[in-house]
Length: 212
Image (cartoon, rainbow, N blue to C red; front, side):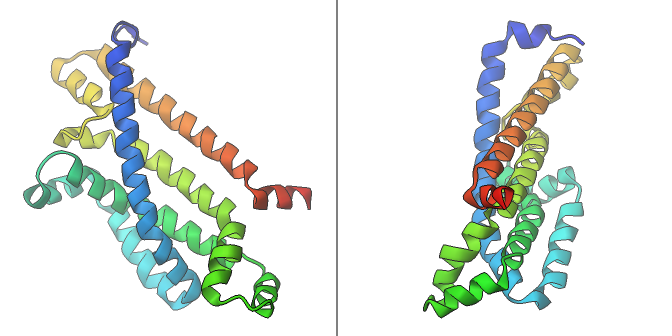
């Protein structure tokens, strides 16, 4: 494995890594803001599960390059279409895990919360979401790793990130550049995955389950 480019140009690789992280984090943040109310709706009205998850599943099966090409006429090149595609792909994991986490809360706990005079909204914010957090964070972990991987393709439309190394390497037939991009993307995904796993274990709900 030729890692010469990675060691000789580590500053550029580091800059592209930060750029890749910013792109991925921005898309993941927007995706979560959209997925949270959708997941709550799914957990509340189970009849929505089949059509909503069906639609999100269809979106997820669209080839990424075709999806990007479809958005270029309306959004142009760069970050806008890239973020739009990444947000769309992240919805499946996020919405499904949010709904599963909320549905998994013990009904007896919800009855106790209602008995204490909590409104449905307060019960959602103070009881259901905190108890569902381990499953929600697991969904975030899956979506984060997927987003980091898919963000590589968005370099094709000048969105930046580590995919730039791979596309430039292909154009120049520079194997070392391609390897540098692939290795760094894989390492970034593994680090983010490990960070979310640690976060899952540190959540109060996870500790309570482990203690029980």
